Image 1 (tube, rainbow, N blue to C red):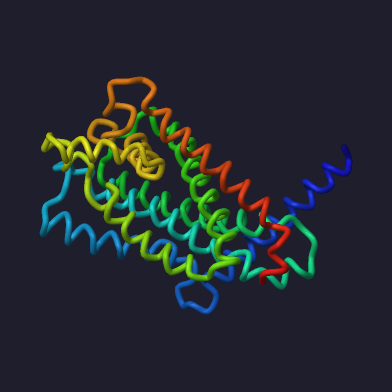
Image 2 (image 1 turned 135 degrees about the vertical axis):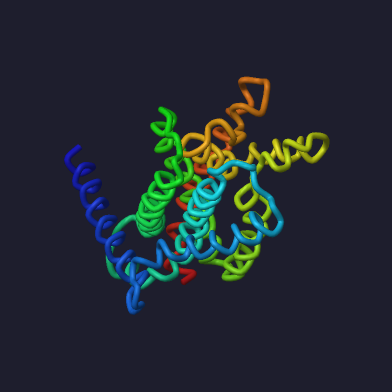
Length: 274
């Protein structure tokens, strides 16, 4: 029992050290430093809001739409950043893994935890925007941490799978870059889901099916509970059957199990292939 506790304590110490080091190195040498973790989503938000909100008029017609858009971009940036950094974690830390003996999965977890710090900073900015935009907060704000945990679990699952694949096939990094763009523009991140569902018909049905995607479901839940429960469609209010919301939650659990399993099976071979 004591050995298990010692191993657990050692793993936490290593994890804490890697998270601190990774976060410091991420912006080392840049003039603005950590401020870039806020500036990048803000600049992307400004461009998307002008293009989609002003020119194309793809909004939900509410005063809270800019905050909803910013929240969606920040949430997606976390997934993109955590998976991209996590994808390279094993290969980039190859020398460290060969010199120091500790569980390989810690380097992937540390990558996602570092991105969680950036996400927390971004959410503080979103909160400030929401206050200035006179957002009426409800008790549903208390549900946001549960959705964030689910989003982190999804990012960790993808990072574990991609980092394993990247150790064998470097092409996965380029493939994931392309897929990120498809997911970003295909999911209701920069356009409001209600913009499509309110039109009815076939496209509305397809748009609702997007909510079965765990990433889309989680981001919509965060928007719904944090900013706009009255205007944001979610998997909980778009389907008439109680069991439908279980689908994206179940997919999250299955994907995390697959990620852990794939990583565990291949982790012993990392030293050979790197």
